[in-house]
Amino acid sequence: MMWAAVLLAAAVLALPPVSLTRVRRGLEPVLDERAREADEDPLAVAASLDVLAACLRSGMAVSTAAAAVAASAPARMAALLRRAADLLALGAEPARAWADPAGAADGHLHAFLRMARRSAASGTALAHGVEDLAAQLRGDAADAASARAERASVLMAGPLGLCYLPAFLCLGIVPVVAGLAGEVLQTGVL
Image (cartoon, rainbow, N blue to C red; front, side):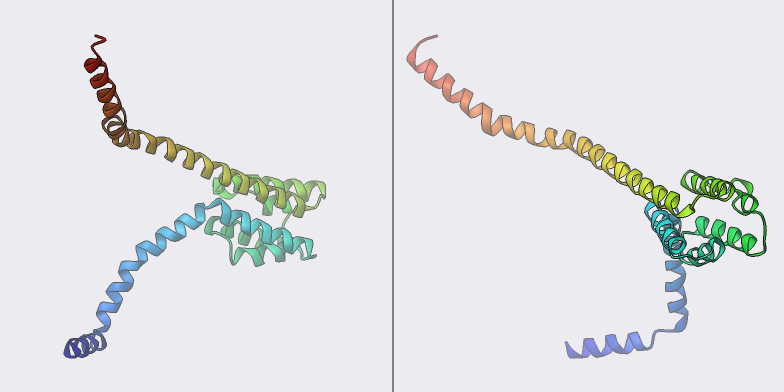
């Protein structure tokens, strides 16, 4: 037993670097898939919006806050924030900086960009609108999760019913009916 452990340790230590590269290559698709899922995660976008609102409420300039949040935001949102931060830092008009380049934004990101443009045009504080959008995203995510859970419970009821209903009939109903039928036939009522 001890020799087996020693040989296993020697094999692990003698593992060539090529194998480690193959292991890393095998993990890359998994990591890319996780990054794609995080990019589509509304809760990650909501968290980034909360950080942006906190930066704006603390008194940071919009371009500085956007650049700071872009470092931790999901990929699509980070690209939009970096672009807007760079354009704002160069002195571009806010309406142009918060424009949607080639329709890259979808749904909640489009709403955020529209809100940022409206805020720049009207002079209203962007932080409050960003907080409201983050709360709406979290609510939508909670509603979607509840709907998926309810759908799963409905889909599980059919197979469970098919499994337990025959058992209930065989073990619960049939013995009662057989017992009552035996008593009725013995008394001669029928």
